[in-house]
Image (tube, rainbow, N blue to C red; front, side, top):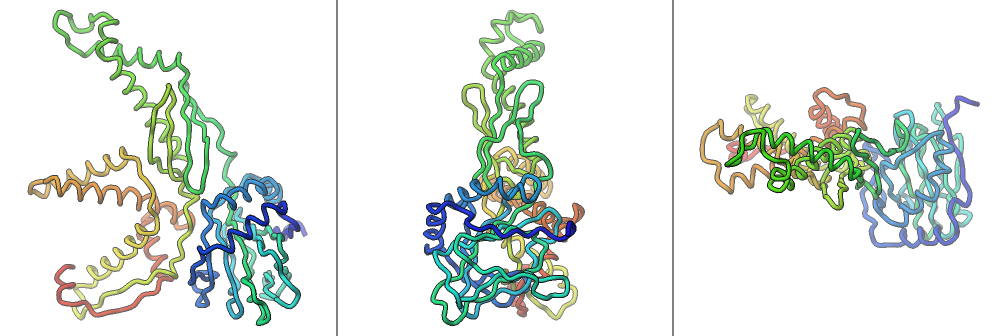
Length: 420
């Protein structure tokens, strides 16, 4: 029926050589134990992160067009990883995502899978009954709407192999693929995309750059004072000789700021700007491509105290642990200009409280500024993924994590109470 969720089985997804390379990656040593099907899953299994893996990035490039044809529009990868199951380690029924426009490409990279080894992927209907069971044949894939309830069954006792599935978590791009955008004087074009890192080229035609530099020199000439010349009457060649480098730097800095604003509007946090031969290059982290975080894997400690007046301070202590976990989970570079802006605000607040701002304190404040910028971006992205809205995002993200995190209560020590 036309209104049925999309689900398509794809045989022989990859050429033989690419399938063999996928098998080789999944025989590697990057597996770790403790992943679950969803946040409340108490039956963990094996996992391998594949974000940025060159083989699986190449695989996505090879199958992207086919998946986008099935989805009816451009797709982007939110996350890519492998799950590993052995006898007794099956997953629980779950949807991968509840948002419309979300899809999953599930790929079986094993070199063989024999009859009797079981390990089917089962898809459930609205009543929770099995509507379809897909055997994990080598080089087979399933492309489906992420809202469909499904589960990976454990292999049988007779299976000596690891049941491996590679999941590409996908979402439909809200607009067309990034095309060169422009102001009247320059164009911005995305030139590379690897995992969550993206790079843009800002091209400024030489005629436009010369004109903008000339305009900036005219501005400088109206304000600068030089011995022997009246204000506003300094010859153009003198102004260019003395202030040409400054004018060029001012123009490029302004264009870089404008281009970075466009990149930020697309959901990216700029980390670096470089200049070469009249072209600016921007590098940044595309937040929708950041790995997902599973709150159920967070182990937090909630301090308790008999004095109810301390409840607010104890709640802040738990909140701080959540932010520390997010800070440890997401480590990506941030543009110095963004850090400088936050640092200036923090330093001004510190000065209002009195006391000397020593170089050591300045260094600490700069670390805090970088953390704030990065965590602000992470919180905004998690709020977007979890449909939490734009108001009070940090409060909502913390509450969402605390719902699923593993929390242990412990009476606070006298020293800890003194630090609250």
